[in-house]
Amino acid sequence: MKKALYFIVIILVGALLGTFIGKLVAIMFPQQAAIKDLFATEMATGLHPVTLDLFVITLTFGCLFKINITGIMGIAAAALLSKPLFK
Image (cartoon, rainbow, N blue to C red; front, side):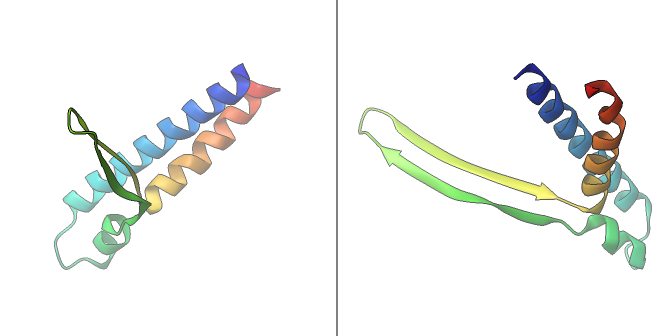
């Protein structure tokens, strides 16, 4: 159980760092550069917000994942780097 939690945290950190690097690279390139499109294009998937109104309190639930190519590379790098930690 503990190993699974560490692995999930490492994968999430890899995704966050990869996405951050992708956004940073996309900012650095000019608007017309084709490489900017590669780094700036995101795929968003998730659950649309659902609202539950209980008259006293209103709850809204939803989840959205936005990932780009460097986020995927960050996940792969984190998985490869964490592999020796779990032997």
